[in-house]
Amino acid sequence: MNTITDLKSQHGRRNRLNVFLDGQFAFSLGTEAAQQAGLETGRVLSQAEVDALGAVDLRQRCHDAALRLLSYRPRSHKEMSDRLSRRGFDLKVVAETLARLEEVGLVDDAAFARMWKDNRQTFHPRSGRLVGIELRRKGVAAELASQMAAEVDDAATAYQTALKKAGTLDTADLQTFRRRLGDYLRRRGFSYEVVNLTVNRLWQEKHPSPEGPRID
Image (cartoon, rainbow, N blue to C red; front, side, top):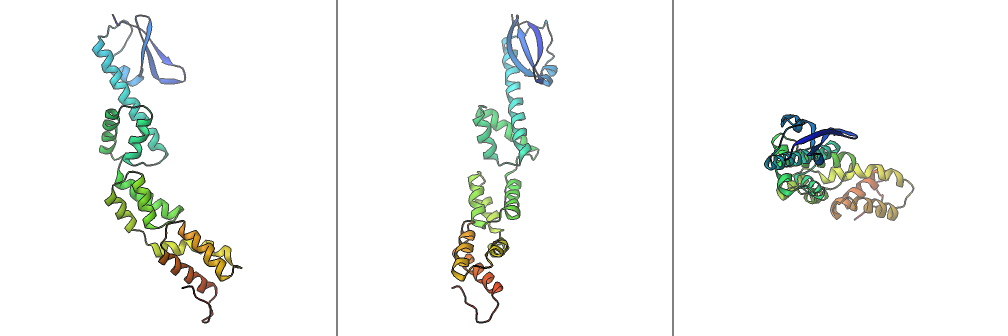
């Protein structure tokens, strides 16, 4: 008959209820959803109502999981979709959840791409090309990733990035200086031309003699 015989808070998860029908555990549901549905002992639920409550709970759990993911850091639409799908949520429910989050600005690929680019430049500087590659891997559209990459001033970024590293090479000869600093910059995605110009500039600044060696 699907008569509600008990409603019990889950141990350690007081925002969820275990619903018992005809003396047997039937399903769990968020407390808020249960209140909105007017669940109480003695009420008889049709199978359609049971199914509808399950769908409501699934959407709520997906939404809660999405918010937990976003609490750590902003994420792209694709990142969110992949993570939620791996947690077992139906693709349709995931799509509906992300659509709602996009409506309120919690999932925004443009904002995410800018945050990623700015964060990289502040804490882990690298070339615009590498920033663009990273954004594409995060699922950001090619045009948006290219736009963010183009905003990176490779020459200025490479110079500022190399300054600190160059300070650890005070006793290095030209060959060692060029190899270590060049490798350091290349690992961060800078082109041969930018690397060469940056290494040359820093060597000249450390050895300002007009007759000092140059790197070609």
